[in-house]
Image (cartoon, rainbow over all chains, first blue to last red; front, side, top):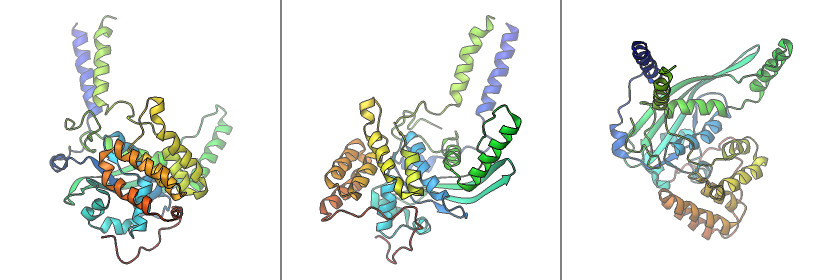
Length: 217
Length: 137
């Protein structure tokens, strides 16, 4: 029994350590007080030279926010509605008054994402993409920042191992070349979003359509 | 071996502690990938529309359509001049999600006022044009 106790204790410590996250927990007082039910995702600001990056991020944000329990406005319809209203430029939207932008759609909160840095490193057999993204959630009623986070993430597509070293090498080289020529950044965007939105104690609070609404963090 | 009896449930509890939420709340189908392909290449619009059609039928599979997607489907229908279908879908979005009411009311008004079919939205893959001087008030 003594062995069991020690083992259980060690296991508990290991379990807790696995959940621990080094950066401090965020202060959610303003977020909780605002209690947004709906989130408007506006066009993504791009400070990198990767032209397809903003669309990758725009497309990938609805799902994690909706699954977190929020009403998420239809991104494509919103994008075109904004373009028709003279708000097609992401930088312009980012600089506009959040209360006014939110008011056009009746949104409780506005989510801004900005790609700060983007770099693909092609090293013989693999392409690693390194990206920094800054996310900000602002109140649609007061314009105040409710939550913000910057993530740094790296992504390398995996090549299949065929068992034959030469073939594996070729496959890896081809995969890396394809990734360099015609990259699909959706997995990378998903990874960055997950890290930003779903990290316990750092991500966004559960929304009204989630059972944890009002109870988490 | 007896110890496993204690350790197994404990491990489950510990792992559960790390998890956020359970399974997905909604049925997304090919929505994300098809929208991205459409942005990359506007000729892929039919696949995007098909994905939205599929997602809008989630309830027939015992699943739920995600927020925003009835509206997206309606928006595409409207861009093809199918105003009745568009209005129907905007109303469905509003019923499913009261948070969308203000936006859907505007969309329904716009669709009703549309004398002629609205041209399909500008190619989303094209670089964003400089906006007019006066922003929306």
